[in-house]
Image (cartoon, rainbow, N blue to C red; front, side):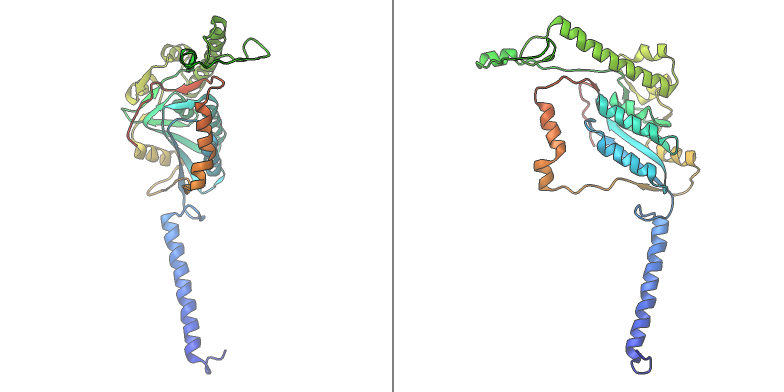
Length: 301
């Protein structure tokens, strides 16, 4: 196209190219200063939220892995607001944090509650920050079993069991527990409790004797936990952010990035694996040990 033959079209083309270039330049400058989490500019701190009862570790573990592999993320903050939950799920998150700290700093920031399994997870972090009134501790293990024997007998329902060994239906909700079965379950609980104590001793560098004195399931405020050496600092989430920045040599405004929120759909409501796990947990089945603060603490989100 000749400039002389089509001066108007040529001018429009030049104007469009210049305007497009300016838009791209402005967008790049904006992203650089605002720190968009999907583009490679600026330093960031990744935030992983652990909220509610810990029943499944997969989402948290995947997010920690993502931040660990992202060179733009200079450190990770675990924002914990949980009374604990399943033993294995808590241990899996703890292990993933352990894999992360050799190459990237991790700080645990406690909210209203970070007890039992919630505290277990925090023990893997480089530093633990709690509010003075945070409820934490609850170093213990619990297994709750229901018994519907009398109820079933009243409505005329009985159950026949064929099993390969005397303990195959241990914890059955339709009969009384035998003394030997209780002893076996208590041994399981004590073994998991021993594992919990070991993690506290290792993570907090406190003597076993000191830990055993307080590892009876009791809870502490953040202030009490600080005096006992169970946490490092008293402070809010913002204080945890400032501590994290100092630990990795960052200053000024730093972009905090959060996991992308999953869009809710009817399919999720009807067929989600999460709801399936809840339904399964409500059915009578194998007894499970839990790192859980009981009774539950109700608090505002």
